[in-house]
Amino acid sequence: MATQGSIRWMPIVLLESTNLLSGMSNGVVVLAIPWLVLQRTGSLTAAGLVAALSSLPGVVSSPLAGWAVDHFGRRIVSIISDILSAISVAAIPLVALVTDLNVAIILGLAMLGAFFDPAGYTARKALIPDVAKASGMSVSQLNGLHEGLFGVGWIAGPAVGSLLVAIFGDTAAFWAPFTLFVTAAILIGLLRVSDAGQIAKAEREEAGIAPLSAWQNAILGARLIWRDHTLRAITIAVMVLAAIYLPTEAVLLPAYFTELKSPTSLGVVLAALAAGSVVGSFSYGWLSGRMTQRRIVYAALIGTSLTFIPIAFLPPLPIFVMFAFLCGLTWGPMQPLLNTIVQIRITPDAQGRVYGVQTSAFYVAPPAAMFLSGVLAERFGVMTIMISISALLVLTALAVLRVKSLRDIDSPGALGAPASD
Image (cartoon, rainbow, N blue to C red):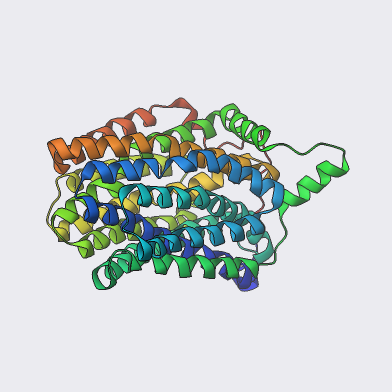
């Protein structure tokens, strides 16, 4: 492992600046879209429907993103994704100049943006081993740094979004992510590192092995996950937990703070969640040297479930912010851990397809949960649904802790060579 003094920082700075800006962009959008719908309709059902349907394109585009990363290269996919995302968010204020934004238009533009996002996210994750190799930083350290900085973006994004909404209005807020996406594309264009996926692809072509189609690539990615019992267990666990939790940020909290007429408070709470996640993600490199992966998973599941309970009762803002931070803190190490598991158990040329299938799986269940939570919250109230979600999180965490496959999480996988530290 390279010493701290021998680390080349430029590749890290370019990748992580892009990662940070993308996190900020998505942080603005995740606050601005529900606010846009609620301001125009006042309907929780409409907000839930838009949040649910705008997630569906990710189910289709994520496997395509994995194929594109493996087929065309990681840098080019990241650049194109950011440019297309910039165009999709700029479309909202531009359309608002010529016509009134109704739910159908907002939904269509939100779905367009959601189609492009997974490609950039997948490409940047796949670049981590390449940048680690070029810089001399360990993969585990860079995983923690990567997810931590993405979380920093989620802190700044909602805060910036809430201020822009309050000062300039709900459509002007979208010019911020447009600028950030364009800047991210420029920065990743300056990154010069090798591409392990493209090297492996060239070797296969020299050996006369035909390239995979997008469909074949997705099927192979799904098979790799399914054959590795530990990877399969952790993927399913995160998918279920995401489906249970995501309606909180996408529908229920925006609805609650819209009723209070306080976009700034919503931004503060979302920022606290992200801040905790940042600290947790940054701590992963330190934790992984002192705890087994299995214990990190158990601590994350138990801690997240317990800290969400006070949040469910919609407490006064200072308490809300404190437990939001703790909830993010306990969950924070999970994403870099998930990245590390893929990098250790799957060969570099197959990581893009695995990331793509995983991201698609994480998109599958939340849409229905978001729509259902909007409908139920309109009928029974936000707090009732939040308490129900809290109970489901506890029950799911207890069930996951009993999964035998997670006991092998610290064993090397048979499907890929470990990534170099």
